[in-house]
Image 1 (cartoon, rainbow, N blue to C red):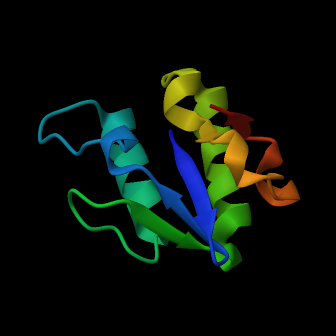
Image 2 (image 1 turned 180 degrees about the vertical axis):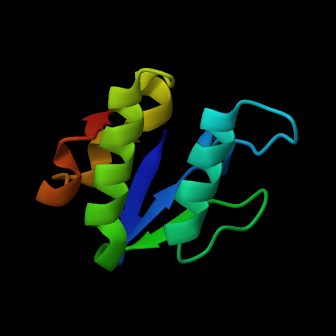
Length: 98
């Protein structure tokens, strides 16, 4: 998922976020609701926002869904642009560069 940090807020690109689909995969729908539940702002067609206070929970959640094997790495890894600079320690285990 494409990600960026501005003013200690993590933004996840709206086009990369999981979609909720009625009658869809239980894992993907659970993933959608888990990500949405800790977001500071999760508006349709807009980037979702995560304050630094929830980054450790986000990191643990992404690791858990990655380890489940039901979702691909592209769906559970944060991809930062090189221009971002250093990735914060708490997010490093679930992050990479674009």
